[in-house]
Image (cartoon, rainbow, N blue to C red; front, side, top):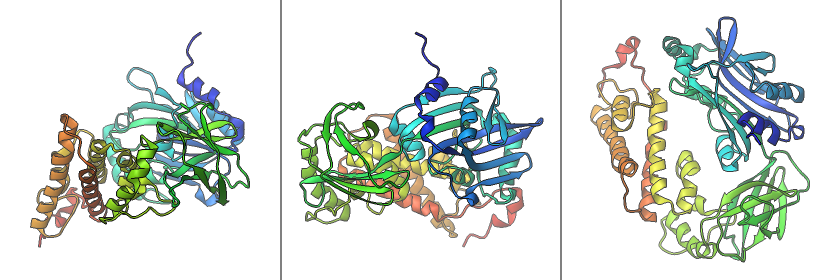
Length: 452
């Protein structure tokens, strides 16, 4: 039997009748009487957003849309995924061809964690990747459009990154930028997800789970599975009690009687809809919780975590949102080396995004380009010696804490080292967030002097 291609797999796996339509966003280029895709995302949903949520903008040949597809329009869109063009509302998006005349390299994403990372909800996804965007546009055109984003009407944007955030549809930013590939993404989220799991509640006798629904629901038949391997078979854990406010439910469960576990699955109406990794031995985790919570607060004596607090929350309390999002689970599951590497990768990528650097610009050279010289793009301080000292902080963090882990095997750090390193990365991100960007174009010569 021939293997289905990713597009057919995705089209056949999703229960389309369950959705009332889909939100969409795209950035495209008008060229030769066509509208050519640069980046497009479609996320199915159960209800349409408010009318003022939609957006249609343009500047020069750049076209930007954000809107809602009805069930009938969504059906046309899904049926046109593998065609010459994609029907999105009243627009036909032509897929740019690559040098080998193909359009996309397709991948079917049926791992809940991958889709949840991308859009915030578990589900199924399809992703097509094409040529790099500045190739699809033409290098000079892409550079000109980068400068013209501020003139986009009816709303301007300061950078590709800010436009990508605006078009994110509640998930990670859309892929936009000179080194990003042309992308077409389509996601079908599940109706429910884990919002948080606390493996030791305030009674120390059970655990609690916060569960989000995409729509308000008056009743719900859900339970948990331990070590199910993603099937509906396994060790079931029924809720002892539950209550909800709107679309968020909180359920109390008995402590699992099987100490060794690898995954905790959420089951709704007999279907596995989400899962989280369980950090090793649950019994050992319960014994360590007080110490982890105490360490995160800087106390020597143990203090019980409050109800609704998780291990990951305890280990990243007060840190930058990007560190909490990407490093909390690594710290909670004792992947300390990965947590440090991830934290400083976030710092490096945030610098790159802020100055629109290419992927080839990395590490200390990237920092020097962004923060060094007589007219740095990222202004950490108006005082030149302080600017130079700040530059060294970023170069040292990336060069000393990230790069060695990227190039050779090191002894695993302990929890305290990992927490302090990720806290340092968090501080660098907050400084970066509050540091203005100065244009280094010829028109800004007046900004090139004036150090205090």
